Image 1 (spheres, rainbow, N blue to C red):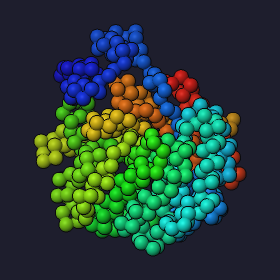
Image 2: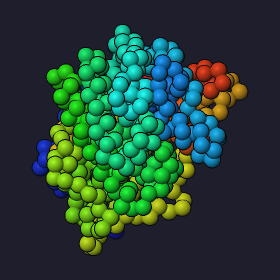
Image 3: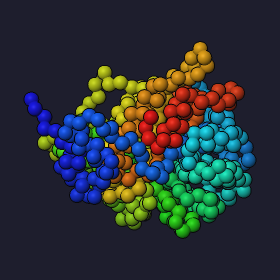
Image 4: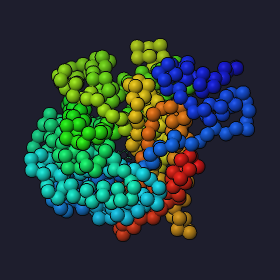
Length: 493
Ligand code: NOJ
């Protein structure tokens, strides 16, 4: 059977891509592609990223800081959860983690060694408001001021996440955490406080990290803090409150940050990949993206829940007002996307939804973590779908990376070539996206260093720097060299 061959540009046109002004292939790569279409082999596709592309690394407070009882920090739901027997694979917790709270200067040296120009970290809400609300802890933001000043002194820009899952335990106890509308309000007050006090130092804020994981794993499956297993109606209401918290925080940052401060979510959108890259499958993957993210990016960017989501939820649908939807869809400046894997391969179908989600065969490969199925094209399609569906003009990849077994070889080096293979393939696909005009401005590798991987404890290591959790010593893995080279050349190596 003969397959008709399309150049990528023709392909884009068929997919309705260029109609949206998104097929801005760079002159260099379009030449290379037409050569490719005519079968000429002697010209290589450009592997450059756009100039000024922002390279960074990412961490989160509870996963790296430690120092849980220092300088007036209150307990978070993750302290409580991790100290509850049976919750964490290796019975560990984040009490000392990587001790970033004390070793941050050393860690900034590591960032500098890599050549990164941005660092994404989160603020621990219970350091700032130990009781969740009310009086702020005067020492709460001091650590972050020190951290940011040290970053600035080293030419590294802070990208601050306001909520990476460490809700003050007091809010869980007092109002039921995200099951209550009081929590989004308290979150907005905390965001306002941070914007007032760090607004002179921070230009980019992320509201909530991975709404969908904190909803599903924290409140549905009970695998993450606070360990709840709510019925569907309760879960849908939590999802609504989390979205509301995002919107209220956007408004608080606008009201209290400096003019020009930028804000957006950092979401692990359900990633829908066309199983075969034909126009009907691409369209089906776009529809699936919109539908399967209905309670998150879709409502944030459209200001409404899709009819299918409400119909599917029936009596369990969340209770909300028209004003809630206006708040949730407050204008944002960018979308942050955590991309690890394809969640679904999609095939166009003649059914009510217009798509079929292909089941994963048992033979599909995975990285060290069994959930992490490598599908590098996810990092091409997710930003492309988001840009096209919602006309988003600025996107950051806020996380991407993998854990590995990371055993030192006899010469002492950790040759983590599986991580390098993973990163190289994902970055190649990301470069494909930027070269076609998908507006991805930067990339934050998860993670700078090994850290507390939630319910997997320290058994899953995601760092490009190895951490000895007894001595807290940091050692570069081979992937740190890979990342340094990539950054230096602004191209995949
Ligand atoms: C996403 C989360 O934001 C981060 O905290 C976690 O460590 C990575 N995924 C890896 O699972």
